[in-house]
Amino acid sequence: MPQSFEVRTYGCQMNVHDSERLSGVLEEAGYVRASEEGTADVVVFNTCAVRENADNRLYGNLGRLRSAKQENPAMQIAVGGCLAQKDRGEIVRRAPWVDVVFGTHNLGSLPTLLERARHNQEAEVEILESLDRFPSTLPARRESAYSGWVSISVGCNNTCTFCIVPSLRGKEKDRRPGDVLAEVEALASEGVLEVTLLGQNVNAYGVEFGDRYAFGKLLRSCGEIEGLERVRFTSPHPRDFTDDVIAAMAETPNVCPQLHMPLQSGSDRMLRAMRRSYRAERYLGIVEKVRAAMPHAAITTDIIVGFPGETEEDFEQTLEVVRRARFASAFTFQYSKRPGTPAAEMEGQLPKEVVQQRYDRLVELQNEISLEANEALVGSEVELLVAEGAGRKNAHTARWSGRARDGRLVHFTPDEELRERLRPGDVVRTRISQAAPHHLLADGGLLDHRRTKAGDHWEAGQRPKTSGVTLGLPSFGAPAGEPVEQGCGC
Image 1 (cartoon, one colour):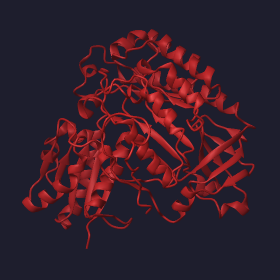
Image 2 (image 1 turned 60 degrees about the vertical axis):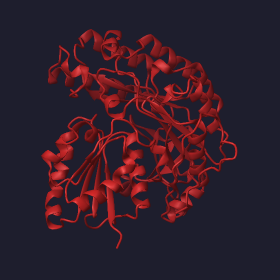
Image 3 (image 1 turned 45 degrees about the vertical axis):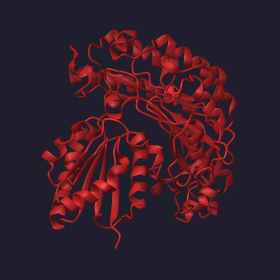
Image 4 (image 1 turned 180 degrees about the vertical axis):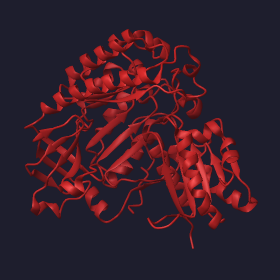
């Protein structure tokens, strides 16, 4: 009997996509995905070191598996990802029932490490300091029938004082454009309608092969892929944002009118302390250019509240930038120490109550702005890609949910006659009837419903599986004489 596996993911989109790669390499090694019932033969934790209390969450979950491991000694537990890269052998010391620890640079080693741990009857810890294989060379079992992640680079060359990612993910490594496009084409051929291009600093793409305009070219090339209806990307850095990228976004029909660009602070003094190599006016200038090219673009951001040394004046400057930028939404975070980062050792660490009070004020302001922006959309028509599991209350409200092209979440009520025919992955048009800060409602029925290949695959329980795409010299378009890697259609 083949052994079953389960991958539990914490953290960012990059980790989610890494977990798809882990599932792919395990399936290629003969493992099968576990059913919902019972505990898998192999449980893999793909961890995050950026989120607050990441270690507590991991060790709590490992503790809960200890009794299952005692009852079934043949069961294996593996820990990978950013926290594994940081803590290394500490994980086995604190949780000696763990069988394998692997880092961010050696995802493809997992099956070998599991086999070695079984054979040697002891824990295997393998943490590489640099990539042994670019993640795109690994197969991936995709989680969605209609939307896919595509990594264009890994690592980061920035030195933000609050961020531990560069030390865990390494320096930026770029994929060749032809390989990126081959993977996007493979997904589109499987019926995937939407891709999100991923990178720690996505618009720095091309730095490794010396083309500062590579990212804009990549966006335009994605516009030529048949069947691909939506292209998104995350997250760009304001320092590297160039006008050609704005032009590519505006002029490429399938690139969505959405931009998520971290601000972190509206205070130039805090931006210097964070080692963010832009200032507030530079940031706002990009926002103005994006809105001039795409008036209806939804711009979202990340903001840190309570960075060491932040004064009331600094915080007020952040509020002013938020008022001027008028973000569609913002991911707001209370600063918390990350061991190993320069900010953790800075003077001026703020009391929790001060940070909480500022955080509450920021959230209140952003909610007001988000609500006003959403209310302006009432009565307008939107095209939605129907999503799975995006509405927690849908079972009680009889609504479905979907994402508009600008990324906004819309909960809608389908007509009775369409309800049985609707599937995640289908495309619908509807009219906005009501607004809230974090979502929109459309309760007047559907104006149009288009069944898609992605919906067919979702209904059949099929998810794309893409083969690994090799590395090579940078070029745009599918490399001459090289076949595009295709998924298996299962």
